View 1 (cartoon, rainbow, N blue to C red):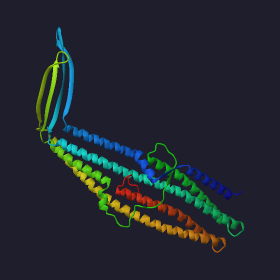
View 2 (view 1 turned 90 degrees about the vertical axis):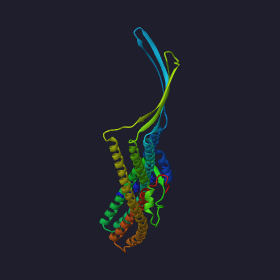
View 3 (view 1 turned 30 degrees about the vertical axis):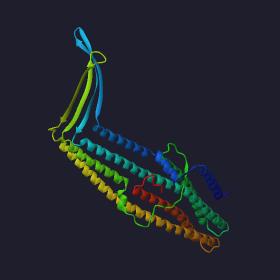
View 4 (view 1 turned 180 degrees about the vertical axis):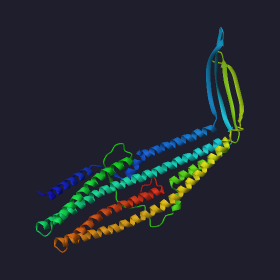
Length: 421
């Protein structure tokens, strides 16, 4: 048995083995991936905990507006030489903030805006996770299809080798053509094995984005249809306003505005009311009662310019937040227009490449018949066959690139994992 036949048998066995393994793998649709990622992705879990921290921070700040009530109990022993006694005390005390220049109220407002910022940050992270998940899904879908394309190319190269081998044995073709055909088959076999290795890498990337703790080979189910596309140019300004990152920056800007008001609150007096009641005595339970109630006013007169510096710092933070928001908003609009143009180019390119592939396959059929009957030379026929092979790979790449452009467009809009397309 000669070497080409041995290689053909080995490749056929490898293809059969791969097909059997693939059929036993877990199959995931895009909807399955979205649902699992929402539950398990660690980046989303981290942002959920960040929201909980912001909620707690708001409650902590707001607690300063409510009455503060404390209880106390003590027992002490003391006396003079030769005489000791116990003193028992228990009671409650309370205080209520009445006025602090609205500092605490503005701090609560800032905390509320920080909570909104955390919620929008979660949406922004969800958008990023969706993009990574979609990219991993597309890569695996492409890797699966590349296995089939590579298998077809192996068959094409095998058929070419068989035809050239027959012509070489009959003296109608030179040895260079035979060696070239054998090299083309070896290249096709290498690319097939390379595609299998790429498939495993794509599976691991998808497993990571799903948030799974352990790697399990999976197969995705889907097609290369682009659904989020319209020939009509969208309103980029409106889309930018709804972007979660821009809304996060808006909330941070609002929080900084409350920070200025809070800083000005330090220029006003702080007034609070206190009251308490205690019972004391030398025996338990004590029965001597005493109470107190009053108002406290605190108004710093001089702090070395501290309050003025704090106001200046708050104003600078606000202006910084405004500048960051403006710059980001302009960048988002540009990104939206660029990604939409890229998507439109990618979709049109698929249509063009499909025609190129159809023409290459038809031309290959004709040229093979012409070569087998001696109407064209090997050099001409091999060029046509190479074009066919390249067209098959280029068409797959073009389809995958169109889906990737769609994923970038959806991310630029700020769509989250709730966006099913």
